[in-house]
Length: 289
Length: 301
Image (cartoon, rainbow over all chains, first blue to last red; front, top):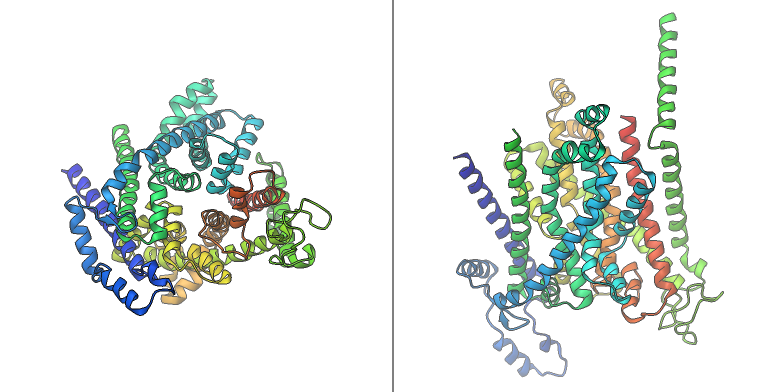
């Protein structure tokens, strides 16, 4: 009964956040200066009659509230609307482009987590200053570089573009993970294990990792959002036809249906990732209890 | 009298023990103090250089030396000139001035907004807290760069360069409140039920007096930490927006639009190298300042 209630609460919370995101974006786009103006109307060569004809040919937008309600109802029926900029169904555009972003994000997340684990795990058990300086220096350097600049640099020097997402995600994961592991390594039971002469690997695997694992799982949810942010920069800079590039073009063209749908989908994806990580964390805590 | 003296000597011995701990502790706080000082001095010197950029470079960032487009490094142009003949050093210093002046201003704005929202939510609890938490969740669930691109593109793009600077940094300040608000809300919630506030209430301290005299001074370290953490984030975000063509518009220079030269100029470019190096140095200094601040605080406590 408790689980059902928790699940219902989670679903309602997800739906409210996603709808709020959609309404907020729709409101921003509708209130933004120049919304609904066709760029042909800015051409000074056109006379008044041509301008009137263009304005008459423009589809009726309706009020903000009616548009939002209509759009939300259509979304529930599976109709994501028609992109004004591409003049194509939004669902089709998303279907075409999501594999590019998914591949980029998956490779980036795997690479970022692998790098972060490689540097953070020894950090918790060994006190080698060189390793610590190397890890801190590398993560500090990457944290100070804008992801778009990193993408451009790797693009210019012909490096693998998937590495950009990994390199952008790595320092953020590493910093959290290092603090988590350091906190777990300072617990009294770890000190007791050290005093008993248990080996560092055994201490790491049996006494440190289990303590830090729940929060590391929560971090996995957050890292999805980080990876998407880095993927946007990579796709725009390298002209990859993914969701990030689509979002950028939709924002530049003020393509309301596309932007609202993308915002809702991105919000949904990150919220689901966070909720899954949260559910795994709580499940683990329950099992341990 | 003797009691006072023994108390004094006890205090002195405690102080010297604390000083010894600070000097000999594992993380070598003496070096971290000096590192922090070096970082702050570097930032101050750079800020001064950026303020007097025209005197140092000998030209305005927008001045075109039409006889020297794309000039190499020389005594006259230490970083060369760009394709339009503008001195890269002057542009780099002017870009630094913009970042070092406006990123802190945006950080002040976002911290103030976060204090209002997070503080109100944490202090009142109940429905306002739930609404604020939902808003914070929504803002944090959207990837930062996606949020920035969407919001920036909805504002006018064909504005004057000065207006584009104002719009960019105002946007960063207006959108960057969510993460600090979460921390501030948690801090206020902890303090709301603390003993000292309970005692203050019992002594008749209420309303604004309670907020300003009791809560605000105790919240100051949290607010300062959020302010310092926001500055490098905003500098990086401006650079990202500039690189994507949504930041500060030409002829005003910014670190983002200086780095955009990478798109067109693939060969070795001293301007880009200097810009990247300066950016790394400045952000590194901010990292040192924020990290050492929190380390010193945790050591002291």
